[in-house]
Image (cartoon, rainbow, N blue to C red; front, side):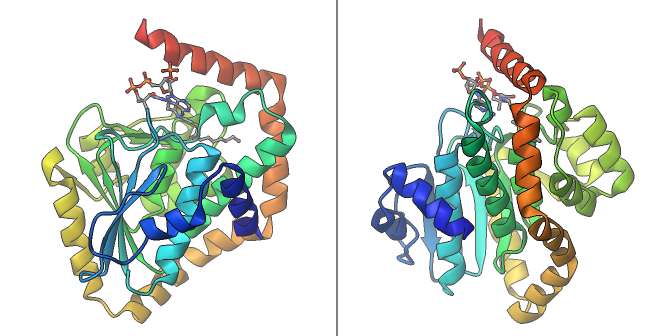
Length: 292
Ligand SMILES: CCCC/C=C/CC(=O)SCCNC(=O)CCNC(=O)[C@H](O)C(C)(C)COP(=O)(O)OP(=O)(O)OC[C@H]1O[C@@H](n2cnc3c(N)ncnc32)[C@H](O)[C@@H]1OP(=O)(O)O
């Protein structure tokens, strides 16, 4: 049902599914999605690289989320691909997370549709049968960090500007329970509590130390390192690895699935509060002023 809603959004956004399908095709040549998701398939290796291309900062707009969801679903269904690298087409920014403008000044129906898409992307990533490796080649706050935490392995470029973390409290908002659970499953309870309360954004060395990423490498080696990690993981029999992944992650996703509608209602009522709208507007203003 969620995918039907997502397809509806995509069609309303004017995205042609035929073009999207071509972008996720199994041909070994580089193909370009018409919009925000580039897919570089390597059918011989069974690996596809997804590059985020939603300038200026790869924020998760509804259209971008929808394209990502459909692209992941196509790759998942195409048994050619057993491994996927997630990275940015604009080195410097992996993803700025949820698009603040999607959560500001809109109506409840929009917030509900948006949040359902955010949930859907997380579900697609977190229990994907494919091996997902995040090649983090830029800053990755909040929802950007969540995407990488949902992968099986994270490689971060060694650049002090490329901070990762769930910084929601700094915006005056609260990371939902499934963001928290994803973080706890990665770095443990105590480190998560500190990181979440303080909205910490970790530079590479600290991110590695706390376990937020698995490897920090020079910027020009992020993609090759991600490839070699996937190659190692591909050597494990798929069925055994997939069942193990599911065993480790299913309780976390089931928790959201069983309260999905309530989670949407919570989000809508939280984000619609005047005080939260003001906080978000002030944060957007602060981002603008940073430039001047
Ligand atoms: C129950 C509620 C739970 C909701 C959960 C939310 C999770 C989230 O993901 S909330 C989003 C949190 N994201 C951030 O805090 C990131 C904010 N952005 C930045 O820190 C920086 O932009 C950057 C480090 C990502 C990049 O810095 P850089 O100097 O290269 O670019 P900027 O000049 O700051 O930005 C360019 C342009 O992009 C706009 N922008 C930045 N982030 C977002 C965003 N998340 N959504 C929408 N738009 C964003 C920024 O305002 C600039 O726009 P203008 O050119 O129009 O000024």
